[in-house]
Length: 394
Image 1 (tube, rainbow, N blue to C red):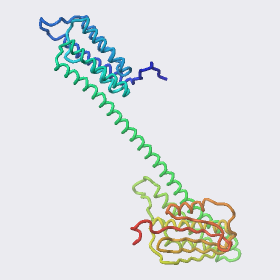
Image 2: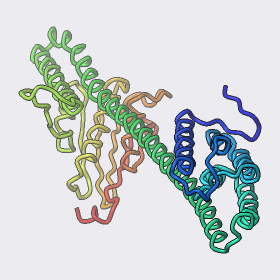
Image 3: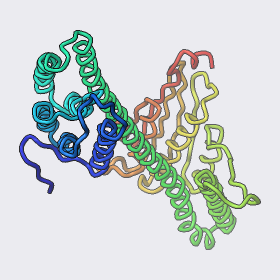
Image 4: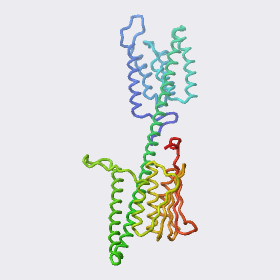
């Protein structure tokens, strides 16, 4: 932990190096009157005068640590030089200007204003002691006002740079958070897709595999159909998995391009229903209203909702009959999947959660519960079809 005396501040190492460089530069400036040739009528350049001039410069090394104290020390040392040593003068009060600039840059508002008033008041007796000319008075007030203005400008510029850097950091943090949220949403979407594909395929394959041995003994022709259904279901699942993994693949050999097959759509529902029908469940499909061409993402959502609802029928409902109905209206599409099975069991699995998430992603809603008259189970999802003026005429 770094500690400092009251009224002082901690200065980074890079700023301390800068302060030493400024002090050396000022020392070079105040040395010039001592080394350039001088006329015989001017005061001599003595080592005592040069040593006292150097003492005026040394406090600048600590100008950031204690700006006001350094300014007071510089002014006091300058006054001591003027009253005790008759040495070469300086064309400009370099040390006082640098110290006053630092006060304007780093001190709090009230403190720097008080110091500014005191410095302005000190200029008048200093000029009166020197030449007493109005020209020197105006020049002295101008250079100290310029030092104060440059100090305030530096502080304002630093504050602006800090604000820009803070904004950049906030934007970077916001971008990172949004990227993480997008990644989380994408993981959830992929998880839903994988669940729907595998759950549906495995459920149908299990049902067909369980029925196969019985059919071999009683009706060989049905056994062959069951095995064909298992094969077709497995191939369809593999196609959909390859499609998904191809989209996820970021790179790969150029001679092995990633597949880019389209997402499933409403047009593929009959094939889906036929696979379920081959498992021994009677499936009926009804489309009412005025069917319209759906956007690709909406069509894929309808397909996945029906797929997951049928998967639940195969796995849990113990149903013999299921009805899939699509109701088209100008504003929305309603998907209803109703079975005559055992009805709700009080639990909500990932499949039903996924159905609600898919519907909500399109601004719709989904419910699941007992079927009409309290018999069986029904999944009802409503998806809006017109979300913008452009969609009205599509």
